[in-house]
Length: 247
Image 1: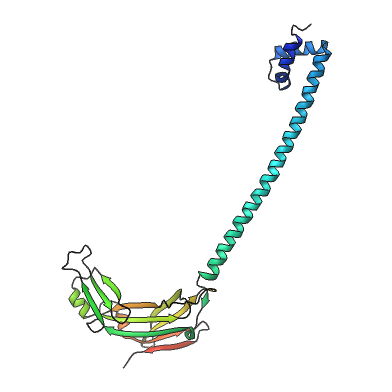
Image 2 (image 1 turned 60 degrees about the vertical axis):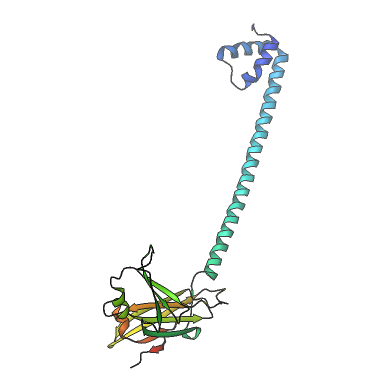
């Protein structure tokens, strides 16, 4: 006969059912249960309740997993939609994909010497200035400026330097343009092409022209000195002469 009383056995039953009691204690509990019908019923009730709790817990776990999966799918869906919207916005309004023809762009070309008539020289070398630079301010181009800091003899450099300027205006926002100078049939020709704007939202209310300044002299960018023509290449490959040098 077991040495355990009913009260002690019933106190130990929760741990016994959870397999938390020692082997020696299990033997005592089982001997008592074999002789006590009331404690056996209490044990069986506890086991049924535990089984029901486990079933409910498993149901809760499965329900939580299902809810988590649904939330995850929705979050992923929102992320995908947002990413697609951002990509579509960039594709349509930011990335230069639409090619323009010569009829869409107004191009002018100027070729002139750097002198007091065309430019204002800004010399900071004798001032208390950390940069110690010389700059050129172009009078006919809304006083755009270019600065130089690596020329030893500025006075001589400026006196022998010319500027080749290509100005481009369009009702479209110009986002990309290709410019190259090549020798062809004894001539030096500048080709401008692959002008691009975006697919949407590409009309500019305020003109923001693209201006290409190229300084040249005998020892710097000398190919610009000999340019005889500027030609615009249309998307279909046809060409339009924009500028011809004066003879």
